Image 1 (tube, rainbow, N blue to C red):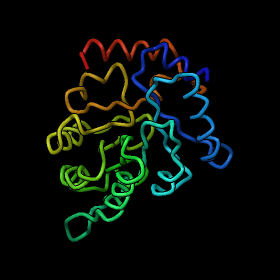
Image 2: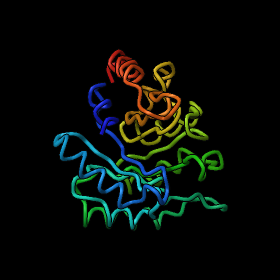
Image 3: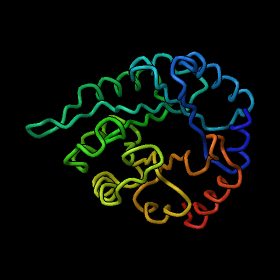
Image 4: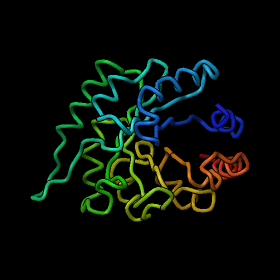
Length: 215
């Protein structure tokens, strides 16, 4: 709850709850955490990323208090002979519209530790994904590593900045380079201290950079 309070004090638009600890902080722990945060902050935007669940299972367990679901694997794959396989993305989107049409679905595309760097047509895969998620969410090559600006530009031109999210390597120093290409900014490493705890001063610095760019 201390982490949440720091984010609120720093002026965050919302927060993501993610169970990085695997089985020690599994999906039940994440659900319990969401319930506690919601009770303490009734109007705060809260999204969940269940790292220990497959996308369809994550949707099933998503608590009522959540406003968003983020899945690292958005379910769109580039075929070797051209084109894209969208079957999994389509299935998740259809179930989301039936069971939780109130949430925002963030789907990982050309995402770190999965297919980032191996997708040849990043603009094409973004276009293929867009009908099946609210925010096409991409990343750099790893946690804390900035994305290639050329990749972000191509994806943004294909689907529009308002539909694109970036989930790694953003900082107060490099924000201006990405700001016109991406609307949804998901940050952690650059606003945390060496122990991984959110740093209020760093968060305020990032918030000032956002406000300066009128994002």
